[in-house]
Amino acid sequence: MNKLYMARNPRVAARSLDGEMMIMSGRDSTLFTLNRTATILWQAADGATPLDEIVEMRICPEFDVEPSQALQDAETLARELATHEILQISEEPIAQPVSQTDSSAGEAR
Amino acid sequence: MPELSTAVERLSLVIEIGGMPVRVHTTDPGFLTMLQDRYAGFVSSSERAEIEFDVDLTPPRGADPDADVRVTHQKGRWSLERGDFRAEWEPASRTGWIRQTANPYSIDAVLRIVHTLVLARQGGFLMHSASAIRNGKAFLFAGVSEAGKTTISRLAPPDVTLLTDEISYVRKQETGYVAFGTPFTGELAKLGENVSAPLAALYLLAKGAENRIDPIPPGEAARSLLANLLFFAEDEELVQATFHSAFEFVSRVPVARLTFVPDARVWELIG
Image (cartoon, rainbow over all chains, first blue to last red):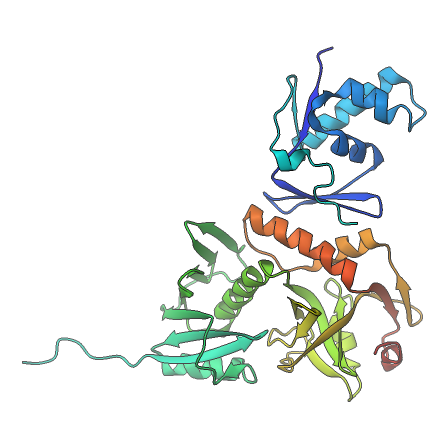
């Protein structure tokens, strides 16, 4: 399987409030509330870390799940988030603007 | 030699909502009178205006006021369009124009939109909520249609000053948030008082078997606030600004659920 890289879409606004991540599309004002897995993907989406590494380092330790199944689910979720233009995905590393690599961007508390 | 043209008198009035004076120019005395009646209490004698609009009245046509609003931004100009009006506004020059028939509803929509655009850059907003002042403090009562905005406004005791039963006006100031009265009415069809007060709380309305106030998690508060904001612009920068403003608001203003039996005792919990 090819590597998959994810980057946050700079055209959305994001805030984390009491552990709940909310994202608003700048294009059509749609509001999304991310579940825990989607939040992990969002926070780890630096454009440089491949998805399989994120799953191994961040998702598997948190959820009692078999690694290959976790990767499959995470890829499905990443593609869904990309469909909503929350994430950008690519089989190559994605260069991001400096401000978007700041993991605290948009944190409310 | 006869005059080739006749000078047309340019009439104007200033409508001041939320402390923001907007001067409207028209050549139609009947339309001016209509506006004076519609915005009674919000007509200002101020010489200063932050925005000047020329209203160009068109003959009646089959315009649809229920059509979707489009608000777009290009090259420093906002374009506002609905079935019953077209308007443009250039913030840099503080001027704009409105093309509509002689009715009070189209310009009302334009004013609401322009106020949301101005407020969005200042951390404020218009919101689907009733609002009122009691003991020097303002309270917002938000909810969808039928949630009880009109009911709670109607139940207000005499010591309560109603700011609106439908669209609240919230400005962010150095000391906190302030709610202003608006002429934007709902079922009560009664203009709010043109006064303001520091905002003490936002209540999300729910009808129930008893009167009570329950805290709600911050995430739900932010979602509910965002769901009740008036926002029209197809503009990423303003969408993002409004999103962040909502979070700042819920971090500074108490937000709670107000469940109420539709009778006046609910006001025992307010203020």
